[in-house]
Length: 121
Length: 111
Image 1 (spheres, each protein chain N blue to C red):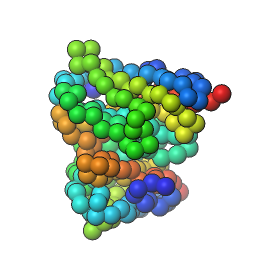
Image 2 (cartoon, each protein chain N blue to C red):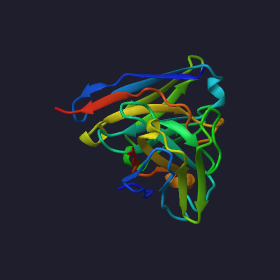
Image 3 (tube, chains in turn cyan, purple):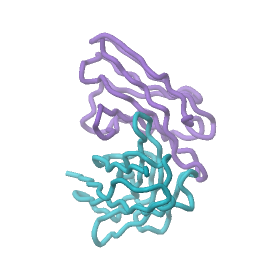
């Protein structure tokens, strides 16, 4: 069974940094692209970032470009999201999800349970 | 404002059919057959229901179907059941710059 388990969320002050992790199991991690998708409280889904299976390619939504960095450790089956210069607009539940191939982002299945990031003073 | 436009809410009675639309542009839904739909119950993670416009993952009931006409893909749920009450989001690949876009979500109420 494919499982994704996010961690690292919490309360951070505006301008601060946070690193999220997503531990994957149940599939050959290096063979699949992974993405981060966030959901602000009471709002819809927003794709944040994606990374290819080999980590050779990384992609970002405009609102996070230059502030967020996605990475992965295929030896530990773990996905990361390094977030800097955080603002209130970054407050959201952050989900990791599995793509459809080594550099495929046309569907997300499955999703982790999410980790809440709250940016507030 | 989301890139893809969905109705905020739809409703139907048990056994009926409902259709949720998702309007985009030729740069996203109209330009690629990579539309997916996600179901999200309150407090839960989204679940993939439809991908590549019309395909159903294993385990998803055939009451769920997808289609597309021009720049408007749609999700149809037939034989509505109480457990279908949830939020539904459309999603599309949008090319190498924008990459991925979601709709704003539609709340389905089963009366």
